[in-house]
Length: 412
Ligand SMILES: Cc1cc2nc3c(=O)[nH]c(=O)nc-3n(C[C@H](O)[C@H](O)[C@H](O)COP(=O)(O)OP(=O)(O)OC[C@H]3O[C@@H](n4cnc5c(N)ncnc54)[C@H](O)[C@@H]3O)c2cc1C
Picture (cartoon, rainbow, N blue to C red):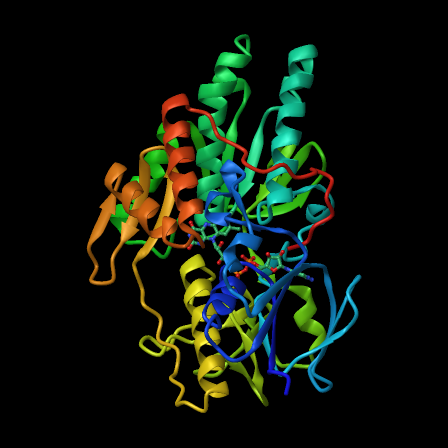
């Protein structure tokens, strides 16, 4: 008799967490992702990704395919792909993540640079380098804002991107392009809300502001972007910034595939799930990670879109399916909060622990590193990351460990 098939869609933190926790279950696991690597988004700025296949090495009941999911039929329990023949399932884990949300900002989908996928990070890097080379050949375009970057969003993605770009500008590029002064290449962070990092305590917010300013990031708080063109960013105040680059770190929504499922979606196009992470009316379907709206049992709040939430929810879905198959009792999902943390730049990070204790600076960066290393799927990946971080620290260079075509069409 054939074993139940668990189809895992998406091999990010959520999907991989689910697949690994089905290792000893009497099931066949099929994991499908459009990439053959897993983007490690917390280190997107260093173009970090890990190969997905070794993650399930030694897991005899699992196979991995690289393909794009094109349709999910919950009633027929069938998934369609770009190339693979359609696959039916007994259990489905949806771990297909999120994609950028431009909130209808005029010109953003055509001209902004989102920061979500590895292809996004590569595209931004190529564009910024192109602008610097162009300015090196023809300095007259500097006045037009060729080197200026506007980063939209005062949350972790925007803050970290602005910090990383400013470090790149003031260290590496200052050495490579000696004739260009810092005032000719501005990094401006624009946040529509009243502050940066609203999820952190005031002392950490103040530290973040100072750390960014120390890195020469200009802050425009309480200011919203109205429209974007290839060389100008128009603000709702009427002001226009000369900038050939606008990085969008201001919002996410669930993968667009979820819109075709016929489910009622929560805020940000996320799938609301029950206490065991299954989808309403479909106990055989689990949604995990960024695509899911998971309510924390302790606080009654929807959990944020974080690596640790994705990993833990994926692991829980995997364990739950194994328990269902073995006719064992299942448990509701309980998130273990290891603290809220964000990186700002080299030697600068903020951490807020559950009990309210806070850390900042180098200590906080070490804590950030420890928690994020634990998210990596294999010991080999962790070892490589430590070597990369050490290398980056000594040489002040950001490493690219995987090559991706910058023109790769990618939405999430
Ligand atoms: C720039 C940035 C920085 C971040 N920094 C941090 C941080 O410091 N700490 C932290 O905890 N979290 C951080 N996060 C958030 C964290 O990365 C996400 O919460 C986490 O990756 C979500 O995991 P996931 O498995 O749900 O989705 P993902 O990791 O996005 O994985 C989804 C997978 O689904 C695949 N997929 C999507 N659509 C299809 C399709 N149609 N067919 C086949 N495959 C598909 C994708 O290729 C991808 O591999 C950051 C996010 C970003 C964007």
